[in-house]
Image (cartoon, rainbow over all chains, first blue to last red; front, side):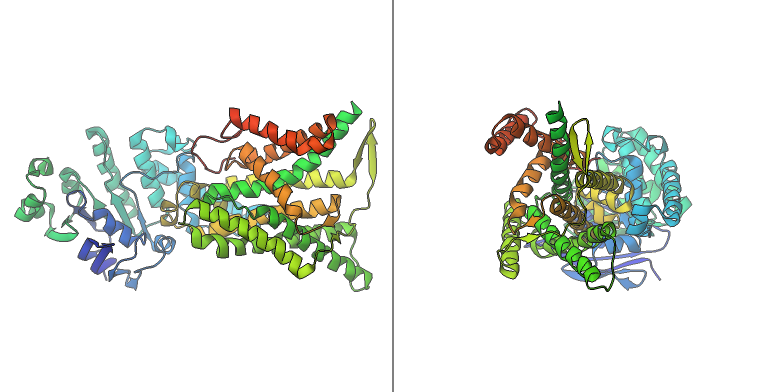
Amino acid sequence: MSLLRIENLTHHFGGLRAVKDYNLVLEPGQIRGLIGPNGAGKTTVFNLITGVYRPTEGRILFEGRDITGMRPHRIAALGISRTFQNMQLWRHMTVLEHVKVAQYSQITYGLVGAFFGTARRRWEEAEIERKAYSLLEMVGVARWADQVVTNLPYGVQRRVEMARALATEPKVLLLDEPTAGMNPEELKEMIDIIRQVHDRLGMSIFLIEHRMRVVMELCEVVQTLNFGEVIAEGTPDEVRADPAVIEAYLGREVEVVA
Amino acid sequence: MNVFLQSVVNALQWGSFYALIALGYSMVYSVLMLFNFAHGDIFMVGAYVGLFVSTALVGLGASGVLALPNWLILVLTIILAAILTSFVGMLVERVGYRPLRKAPRASAALTGLMIGIILQTGNLALLGARRRSFPTLIETTTFEFAGVTVTNTKIVIVLVSILLMIALHQFVRRTKWGMAMRAMAYDFVVVPLMGVPINTIAALTFGLGSALAAVAGILFGLAYPVLEPYMGILVGWKAFVAAILGGRGSVLGAGLAGFLLGFIEIFVALLFPSTFRDLIAFSIVIVILTFRPHGFFGEAYSARLRL
């Protein structure tokens, strides 16, 4: 059984059709890519999967269960997590707090425990902290744990966002342009981190990218979206050679190849 | 000197009321970006709920069913009234504010004012205009130090307020709900995607703020045992002023500003005729805001829940 299955997904914003008849099959442990020009509807697909938008038509199945129209926090608790194209961190909270908040749905102590410091709360808090630090180490930001995120360099903030997404214990991780705005050095580090996270935690990853290099290095299968429709699907090499894809990028194939 | 110290004691008592109520304004503002203008009336509701709970408990003793010592009645009254009033607050959020979460802020403010009037007039319609007196739960004992008289009631009021403020501070800083509240101060989009049920957190925020207002209502009833449906209006506005003065969204600021306002009022009344009290006190607040438009702990365009 595939982990995430999307059938005939369509979404309209008012009269505008942002996504049309979109299908996806994501297998456990797979890394998939979603590329396409600006405004093609890539982020809308993520917003539909995570419940930010309710699709006009179609179904989304996660582990065989229909999650279409489910509330975002329920979907997150089931095991779908994501990062954002333009980072959405809570500027004045610390790195550690970001990762702790994202463990919300796994924390079970009650209000009584919160006020009176029960043994269970202490045990759970130690566990939360231990897990938080191990994630921060995995993405290489543990030494900034007690820093407020707004003071940190851009590349570090990107990694904090990744750690926060991982803290929800996702089975599917959606990465929305994880390398946006990065220099070649940071880009390489991010690719390594994604690969390492995938190897160690083994979840499926579905990522939106602009840079072909990232897709080439990481993805087994790539879909190309244009005006809300999939125009090509295959291995990165196949997709890159597809005339429809080249045309969609309108002579920007130099950048696509780069 | 004695007059001065006496005024400090009185200012601490009034500051306690303002601070406890201001915390509710501030928390709700930082989490939901709205001022719950019905909050002063929630304080009134809390005082009445406390009145009924304590009267019932005293009645149980009088009829010989269950005679409890007064201190225990007070503790039970505070706990039960806080819980019951928190349900009132959550109901206000569910019915009044949740449907308007994406509406213009002015509509939400208007709703708050309307809910306040509904609570006042609802009380009037249900219970009548007769003033009600709060049972005496603490036999007043007066202590004298160096010519300053302090009643045990005042000590209880100040201690309970400070304890609750510390508890709230710990709650916001350390628990998963507190951290979720602080995260919600930034956005309503990412927070649910990280598995946090924002409607639950919104309800909890209202519930906590209302519980604190209820405690303030009961403490008020201990000090000034005459309750009437409009008792929340002026106290509520002053607590609102304290929340703004402290810096929107700052728990610490709201608490400190509540006490500051208590001091300003009491000392104005000490130096000028008491009819000048609010006139001069609010003028001072305007001057402070002119120089610190974001309050003591506030920052420009930021409403995050700080510690």
